[in-house]
Amino acid sequence: MVFNVLSRIGKREASVSRVWVLTDLSCSASTVAQLMAAVAAAAAPRGSSSKTESYVDTKRRDDVRQANILAARAVADAVRTSLGPKGMDKMIASANGEVIITNDGATILNKMEVLQPAAKMLVDLSRSQDAAAGDGTTTVVVLAGSLLRCSLSLLSAGVHPTAVSDALHRLALRTVDILHGMAIPLELSDRDALIKSAATSLNSKVVSQYSSLLAPLAVDAVLSVVDPAHPDLVDLRDVKIVKKLGGTVDDTELVKGLVFDKKVSHSAGGPSRVENAKIAVIQFQISPPKTDIEQSIVVSDYTQMDRILREERNYILGMVKKIKATGCNVLLIQKSILRDAVTDLSLHYLAKAKILVIKDVERDEIEFVTKTLNCLPIANIEHFREEKLGFANCVEEVSVGDGKIVKITGIKDMGRTTTVLVRGSNQLVLDEAERSLHDALCVVRCLVNKRFLIAGGGAPEIEMSRQLGAWAKELQGMESYCIKEFAEALEVIPYTLAENAGLNPIAIVTELRNRHAQGEINTGINVRKGQITNILEENVVQPLLVSTSAITLATECVRMILKIDDIITVR
Image (cartoon, rainbow, N blue to C red):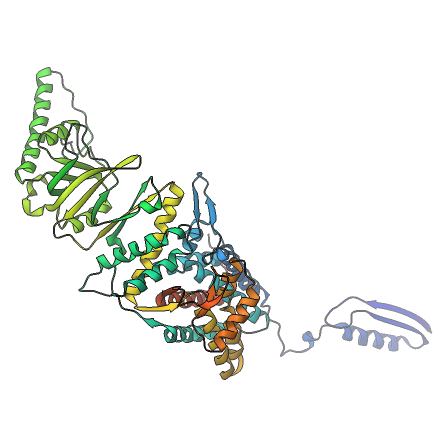
């Protein structure tokens, strides 16, 4: 029996892609059946024959991890161009028409609407750096983005995420030791070193041209609130920043006393300047009392109406007499939400008694005001005593720009607080000046907490990269490979500084490596001159706490992202 067998057994990637069987021979039907069975066996998947082998699909985990890393890197790339003195600014336009111009990393990320959960972690990272150090908010996000990029290349090479995470933990501990080795001790009495550090922080801001004014101001403000009993602690809530539109940033001043961005209430002709002031901070209202429940009183007779008005007058007059009896001549009245803090009638009587009135003091300002004046807030007229008053040489209303402010100066036994009056030609400059001043204050606070300085300009990152690269050669196995990769990731900071300054980043970073290998550990990028110099001689310094906090927070965040292998949505 002659057969022409033409058999095509379909596409299967696991084994033979195409099998053609062509016979033109005389054979029995059983021979053909055996031939077909052999071909079918060859086409079957190999794994199915073995009971010991099983295939586990890890594609979803890898996809989730990759999506998280890419989303977080996108956030890091968004702020990368604003790093350093020559970094670009971002204009943030909100839906309600508000516009902010800034290059502060924390502000940019706070205003961004980030939806992806892993990307939100980078926003929180920036916020944590702002709370811990106050400066370096852009640096920490750029560092985290670079470490994530290296992590992704390690994962795609087949390294297990736990191995990468453990290597990062060891790297963080080692980098902190390297930074401590580079640090220069500092004394708080060395005012020039503190000013240099604050000026470095301000140089990357929009208001960098005013750093010679704002840096000494920030140093004086922080040093004036340091408590000798706790010399390592500074509470920046003791430094109040008051913004007032008008003038230029040059007009910003430090006020030893209190400043209120309010006018004196002298609609009834009261005084606008008082010397040898006795100041009371009151939390009750000088106005007719109201009933506890909502109700209306119907007056049907003129005599009853006269009686109500007379009682109101007597009630207010009685309060004013008690206030005047203590010798008080300045009243700071807390803002009331239940009823008017003062009425026209009470202002009239207070003006007659020659008492200066500042109303609508915010509830959250009361603690700062009482601490500064060294007085006690008075909650009830019955508790009005002279010993609860504060004393000052002068309380006066001053015209500033197109508005007025109230200044209280020469306070007796003043608490450890200070006020900074910030001026600016428009709201955008004013807001950015406040943010920049806050960063400068935080830098000085860091130096009070941890009294060490290190060089800036990318010097610490290059030195860390060099020393970690040498350390990686001493280690064994996968850890050595991971740390070598991460050591190169730290070079993103000097690379970005050079790139943002319009220099050749590859040439600059290569030259930096060369100089550090020769032992010049304080060599960094001088973006003003566009070359590599000893950065300490150029007075570009930063607190040790900023760098150590940035590296530990960035590695912690990256480790957390690497550990996530699935996103579960719940309703």
